[in-house]
Length: 230
Image (cartoon, rainbow, N blue to C red; front, top):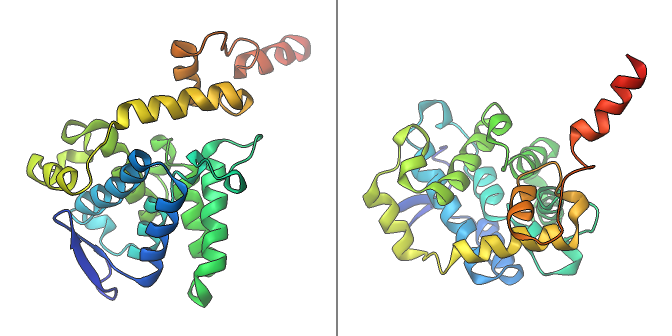
């Protein structure tokens, strides 16, 4: 990470410490339930703990990485102004983060930096795409994924148990398992059309009565046309 930014140690991890990052933390906290807020903070810390050990990620923009990680799940918010009925939660989150930066970021946030934050958030559930994008997108994805897998699933084995434990002591999980399940199932109940082509559907099919992807899958959309057109 670039050394130009001021830093602090949080949960044993050295992270950037700018007024905008602190504002993003407050914004996320005010718009998310506590277990979900703690998730985005841990994702930020894990991302830095891992990415700072990867040579190819050393020159990433630490503020872009931080903002993307901290605001990546605004699409889970109960704040009506931040979510829509017709967009995936990742897109709602990316749009909300971009609006936050346009409002709070100042002149330093050009089109490129805004786009990288948007991409990091929109792609954060699709590692097979995110890991081939800019360094900030990769690093954001590393941290988010690690909060779901623990040390065992940390990319390249680059997080130690001691590092994981220090983060969780500082930012406890607070029943993240149940909170996450509630969010996924809630999306399948309240805006199912946004869930059929992504990971949310797996939770809907397993836990939400009456939920089914049949008729909404890509094959259901594409195959009739192929049969008609040859």
